[in-house]
Structure formats: C-alpha cells, structure tokens
Length: 378
Image 1 (cartoon, rainbow, N blue to C red):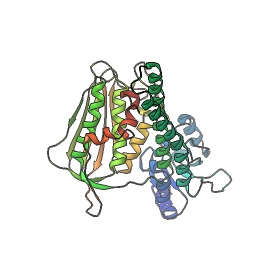
Image 2: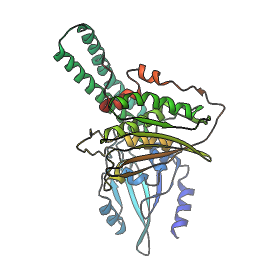
Image 3: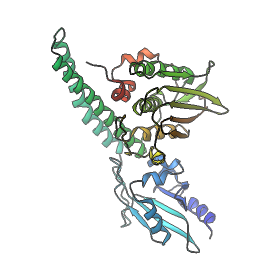
Image 4: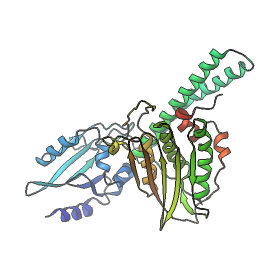
C-alpha cells in the first residue's frame, strides 16, 4: 500500500469517528484531518497545524525519531484548559518517512484522555474569576479619581494612572488567554453578520487613527468608494485589526506611519496593515504566529505572544489566509484574505462610527492599544 492509498483508507476508516485523527506528509504538513479533529483543534485547518501544536518541542529531533520508525508522544501541551497529548505514528516506505498518523488525546495507555466534556464551562469560569476583581479595581479607581477632582495631588494621580495602565494589561492578557483557549478547545464560534466591509474598516481606522496620531504615528485608510457587502464576525475581526495596528505602533521607529488597505480581488478581499517600523528579524519571522512566542527590542513593549496567534485563528476561522512580509529597519506588512460571501439569512451589521469605539473605555480599541497609546483614565 502506497501513501496515497494509506490516506484514502484512513479517510474511510476515521471520517466519522468521534476520535480526533489527522494524517500528515513527511514534513508534518496536514494531508487530511477528520471533522472531530478540526472541531477540537481549529489550527488543523492550516497546513502547518500539527507543527504549531508541537512548537514547544525540538522539531529536528522529532523528525529523527520518526525517521527511525519510532512513534512520538507529546504530552501536556501548553494551552490552558486543553492539556491533551498527541501521538505521532510514522508511515515508512522502503525505510523512508512518507507521513504520519496523528492521534489526539492518548496518553500512551490507549485510554482516551481529552479534558472536560464541557471546556466552555471551564473557560467561562476562568473568565468570570478574573473579570470580577478587575471590575472592582476599575470601579474603585473611578471613585478615587472623583475624590481627587480639583486636587493638586499629582503623586496620587500618577499612581492611579499606573494602576489603570496595568489593569488594562491584565485585562488584555486574560482576554487573550480566554480567546486562545476557546479556539484550541474547538468552542470558538463565529457570530456572522452581513455588512459593508469598506464602511466597517473605515470606522475602525477612524478610531484607531485618533490614538496613533496622539503618539506621532499617522494612520492612513485606503478602501474602495463602493460598498463591499459580505458576511463576517465584526467582534472577532475588530480584535484582529486592533492587534495588528497595535503591533505596528509597538515595534516603531522615527518616521513610522501605518497604512490599512482593502482591495477586492475576485471572490475575496485582501486587507493589509503596513507600517514603516523597525521590522522583524528574519530569524524569528517564521515564529511570530506561534502562541506564547514573544520577542522584545529596545523600542518595543514585549507582550505574552498571543496577539498574532489570535489574529491567525480569527482569519482562518473566517476561511481566509494570512501572510507577513518584513524587512529590518524598513517595516512590516501583514496581509490577510477574507472570502466574499453573502448570506441573506444572517442579521445585518451597521458599522459603528469611530466615536462609538472611543466612547467605550472597555472596547477592543482601548484594551488592545492601551500599552502603546495609553488608556482612558477613570
């Protein structure tokens, strides 16, 4: 049986099983994954989905093990609430590695070992646990700020600013942890609506541009004059946009400027976020979408390494693709595609204006950009 026949037989055997199973080629790129695997691990819709799940392991050493004909068991992956194991069984032809069977949730004993049957309950509990004390902190800061109105106690006011800034940082980290966990647990669902993508992007840029200009970084928005009506999740897509714009501010240099551009190309739209910042070192460019991978330069603020991972999840779940081009000292462009699809059964989305994003002090705009553009004081 050659490898193509092996893939065909695997599809027949495992297509409708409740166990998540995938098949890779010799480079561990996805050839096929059953519905259960994609449901629980949305990253498997990407060609390098298995490698992304294994990125905490030494990949060259892993290949050596597989080429020797031995299986490999990866235990306790790092995603919160999703500590599963992955077993890779090599497929050899004439002693050459041609692919792998990938079984999820096995601990080596043959016992199925996925976490809670209701991971959404665990994630919701986590979300509530961190949001409650944070809301108390924000409310208390507001009371203190009002108590100091008209006061010349600049020292206490500076403390309030510092506490508020770090509270936003905790809120963003906690939100991102929740988002990654939802995607990796297969429970992140799109809330699709049908609306004008051009007007939506204009309103996002209108709000973000006010904040970026306050730190000396102009933001240009280039979209067609005509309407481009399609279906998308505005809340998730907003999170992705502001992550990208925040990064363009974060890794900055003198003369930096940002350009958000939207173009219609056949059955899809291409959206790019370009900057004239410091760029990304070619040695780490291939890793920037890895969850928890982060790097810090002299002019930047290092994060937890979750933002770009969430952007990739959001775009992939929309059925799009994402790519990045960067040159050190010249800038970075992140471009993604979104399929054009109109579903008349979906609710209509009316784009907010920029003032709406600015009026809500807990909007994605402020949460994602608080580190680089400051945060609204209570």
